[in-house]
Image (tube, rainbow over all chains, first blue to last red; front, side, top):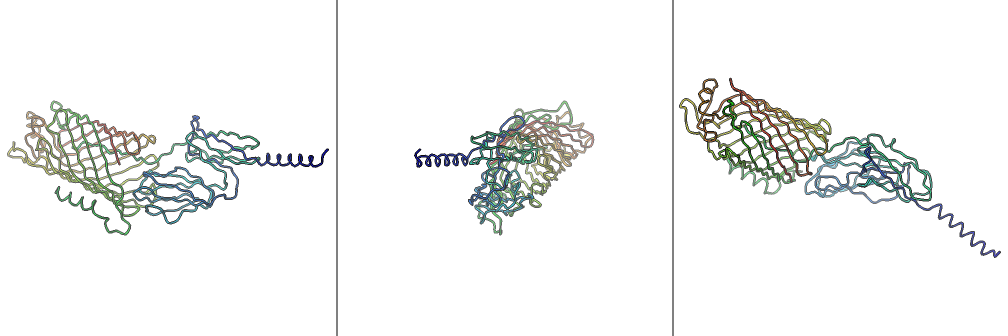
Length: 216
Length: 295
């Protein structure tokens, strides 16, 4: 046997095996409620501490007196900008255990972003427009996504291994610790389905309810 | 008074920002309402054989602006125009033009902080039957808060002064200034969100002070005999007399709102007035359906 041909074939097999073992896979997560309807704005993430991968700051906008988006997920230590693109002022605040802050009455862009240093849920509101509400979910991992209107979220670039996938939603009846599934990532993309029971949650009434009463 | 209000409104809204360290003119107010009402015992007669029912169409427009002093206090200034058309008793058709100023203060940061609100409203009501025309000055103080995400509560006290023109004198012993009146309400309101799109509201008010009632000439003698009538005049609207007296009333209302979107809703209101002067009872019920828009 030709030795150089043999070595070449061995090296080829080695690199093929290596590439196969580090190939990245995706997990598609579908989030449904108890009636099997798709759930939007569910945060889906891998439950492990991973290095922070990006320094770009995230934006939560204020348009037509609403926060956009309704739910944001960031890795711990990330900065979030709160531009106000309404022609009026807003006063943004949070009383959540993991993060308390206040942006006093302002218009335009605040001078600096808000850094979210603790994991957990941060619920925010506007002190002037009671119906304005949004959530930031702060995680330790860099593998996370938010479900769309079809209730789908995709976790990408996962190497082979065993993972805990967790789902959180602002209206979830149960803690996210109970919305957890174990998955073995192998050679092919996979799908997971979560059923997240929803509790009733309301934003303050915004529509006009003034009505002409009879004057006596 | 009308010219004074318009000039105050124009100078405040259209001029530059008021000199305040943080204050600023913020969102505009542009509201509209189209409503239809069916009113039982429109004349608030004490006699079932005199009671008249009717239907009313109304269009309301409000334009103004908010001034935000700081994160907790804001003022509203607005002009309002109301047009009412009645189906059967068209002499009650009227146009109202007025202005109002409101001041609202929230006691701190957060959804559950209570608020205090003060409103002053002045309007001129021009009615086709001129005797019913009057100037109306209304003031109200209201406190309220959200109790939880679905339920909120408010209480208010309001006082109204109306000034009308004297009608024809039909009883020399009595004044004909029927629409010179003063009355007050103490009210409580509760809102309950059934879902994100449906709201149920209920209120109770206790009214005390002057009110007016209209009846046929046949019943006037009975009224004067048993009640302390304060003023009386000829009434071409209902064909008899309209008179003023003093009494109390309980007013109950229930409102169902459906949100079409962030800026508009359909509202269905049922209101029942149950009043009493010295001897006689005065009751009326109305149902109204409205389409509301807010900018």
